[in-house]
Image 1 (spheres, rainbow over the protein chains, first blue to last red):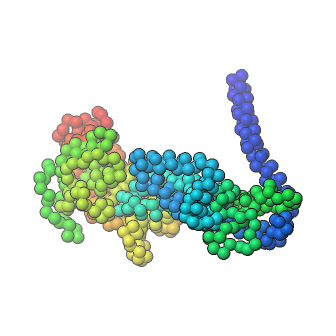
Image 2: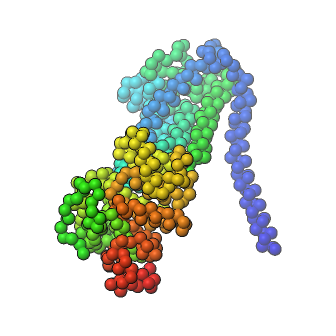
Image 3: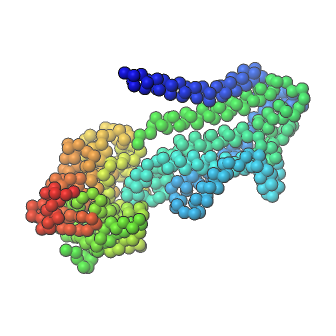
Length: 285
Length: 270
């Protein structure tokens, strides 16, 4: 009887700790979201979303920044998705286990650990100056792509690896080639996981300031970018500027910008979650 | 026991005479890359349109031998493979062999039914689609014919477009058989195809195998000695990577010549 009571107590204490851990991790997120939305939503008007800034960014809207972030992340996705997915599939399915692939893996891990400002400086040296792209959407998108690559590669590799190998063996036993296994089974089955990885990578890139600081972003532009080689305004950089660089900035603009960025990112997060849970519900192995 | 020369080329005939040799295995030795020797100097002639059973204790190399016949061992770490396997006079271990074409001629059913994550219909037509068949009418004919031959049509004809994973275990295994039959292979390899099935499903699979041997060369690794005795036209007892005895099924299970065979059949080891 005594032992049983002790077990019950241990159980309760365990659950208590887990609940506490959950609260501690979710509370800051909830607070950030609530605080920003509460103060920012009021500032979000149609004009705020659709107009150019005016009065030294203190009034008007943030349309060029929203568009710039969309353009940057879209261009980046065009680069990072095919490259990262192809690399992930290679590592999961084709790569032999040797020195070369080991060093590739180590390189990817290290790539993921590099601070984003270093990517920014690399982009400045490599794309902006060496390849003479100038401060431009293209240079910024490529810089963001390199930064996002490790996330996409590792999630793709994991997603493809999670597909049972027996499917591949069956496919081969029916006269299939490696590539047919990839195209008809591994890729479709891994797709939800791959998409989740891509979206999470894109989402992170959308919120980054440092990589675009020297490669793409402008404080203010009186017109929208005309080509990929034009510089652009962007939400995270705009937020940085209106929060720290201009005196007498109304708090509404700051919180409004933050709220728009947050909503954009959360939206992508929700999409990723929906894709993942739908695929899980459909999967039957 | 083993013929020293490849037998005459007979593939051109639509239905070659029964009891002629279909597969000739000559001095086959196979070593895995971890140094494990899995098969040692196996020589065996498998007759056309009959069921040949490979039986013996687990880990003796039956599956390895089976997988050598359609080169599925290529996927595993085989260090060394010596000897020859002739199918209709072609040495399939020759590096120049078109393994894709070989695997279409030599189908395989695994111990655990692995249905592909798609519909029943797509599972059956998968192999044909890999081979480039796009004609919908042909594909659907093949689906019907193959499911019929695997004794599954009556049970699934009204849910061909449902996920194959929704079928029962026994149905899934017959689906795997149908998937192989869709390719109209010449040889069917079965690696303990009924090991996970209940007696009724097992009987259904065995019945369809009995019907199929009229047209196909069947190589079966049975999941029990009883099944071996029930199914074998010819039986090969394989122990520790070596062929101990090979004889017509009736002979081997009634009057085994080798004492080890007798011990195993009587259940004295295994």
